[in-house]
Amino acid sequence: MQLVVMAVVLALAGAGQGCSFSCHPTNISIPVESCGSIEYVSTTICEGKCYNEDPIFIFHDDWAEQKICNGDWSYEVKHINGCPVPVTYPVATNCECTACNAANTYCEPLP
Image (cartoon, rainbow, N blue to C red; front, side, top):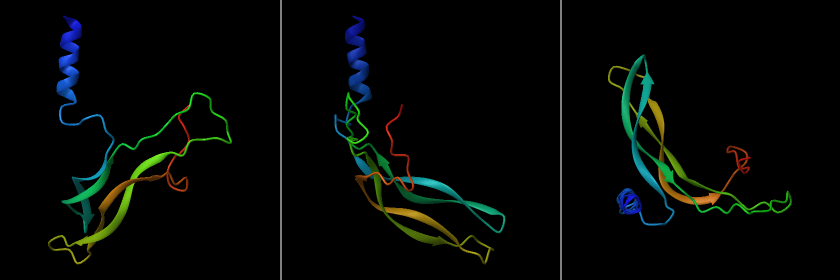
């Protein structure tokens, strides 16, 4: 009986998600501040998982290339009422799984 209940819970939790990886833009609201005033703006970010392999035997010269969810970014400007200083915030325009860039991301396998 417990196995049946667990199977139903897992099926409901994953309903509509399938068994695939997806990297996609998603809407969020972020706070921006200018002239001491804070407002929330709607923007998009990249969200999701990318397929990665973690080999059983790891050799330092044979690391599997790690993929991360990243995309192209543009910037938009928001004017807060009563403030002459505009606020610039990022907007993801498209998202895809790309090779991990060690210059700005931790790309090593977790210990």
